[in-house]
Amino acid sequence: MTLPTPGAVLTSLLNTITSVPAPATSPNTAPSNPLSRLPPAIRPLLATLHVLYPTLLLPALDLLDRSLVTRVLPERAVQGETAETAENEAAAFYLVRSAAATSKRNAYAATLSAPYIVHLDAWNCSCANFAYEAFPSSVDGDEDILGAGTDVDGPAHEEAVEWRFGGMSSDGRDSGAAVPCCKHLLASLLAERWKVLRSHAVERRVSRTEMAGMVAEI
Image (tube, rainbow, N blue to C red; front, side, top):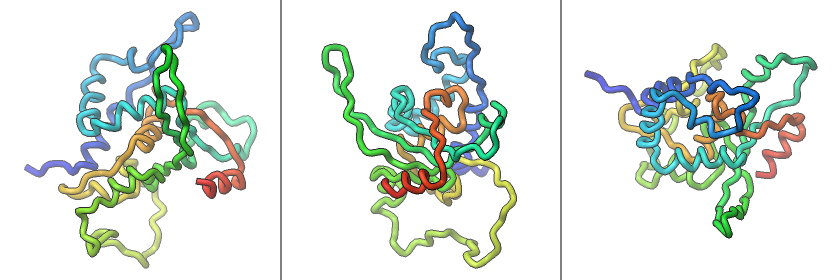
């Protein structure tokens, strides 16, 4: 029996988790953690994700809970955009800050670092931890980075590609390679794919010029 690749397992797991709709709320309901109101059937799936990424899931959820994740989108070209269209619009990239919090008299004082930029399609984060995960010291420098069968000079394929964990990265497509990840990337992915956590990301619409400036500053 052929076992699924790490990327296929994570793709299936994330697709199942993010298919769970946001819990229903009433106007009289006080805001609370949406994860606490999820159906019991989804909790083992989150536990599985925690087992696969034991050092990333809780820190990623903490970043969302502290509103340290910014979802950057281009300015609307057409006014009067429907709510459904805006909700399904993909972010251009994410800006994520890390916070080192220390408890002082039951309050949290957080020291914010410079933001990291996350590109989900390219599967990349500008933080050092992701670089260590993506390029471990055990990997041979002469290894085929592009992967077998890559056609560098071939025509670009413009047809829609089904989403998968790892984006356009070739990591995780074979049976032995893991999919590199970091807490910033995982937090951005959960905000982008799961409507339950989408409201915890700060949305910011900017012009192309502003967007270029934001990327240049990172």
